[in-house]
Length: 89
Image 1 (tube, rainbow, N blue to C red):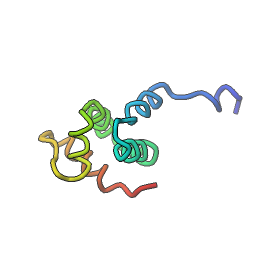
Image 2: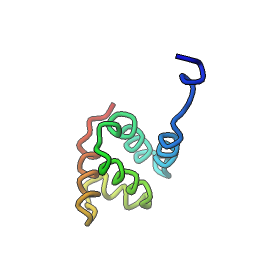
Image 3: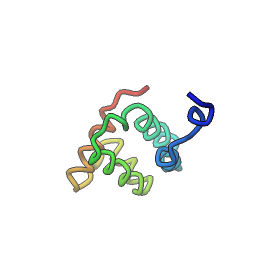
């Protein structure tokens, strides 16, 4: 493998990692871990839903992550359920 290929970063993945950086450490850790450990195993639809979740405000994401609320959209609720059930790295 060339040095360029080894050091190249997928721009989409870098954008997602940046979006996982939130204003709350708990969310940072949860979202980044899910991206690193589980995102690649999601279907394309689940990946899209995860990306959509990253556009939500921190407080709402925290409510979802803590299980206090679930999104009304079934696809988003499914990804939130997977996020909550994912074992930490």
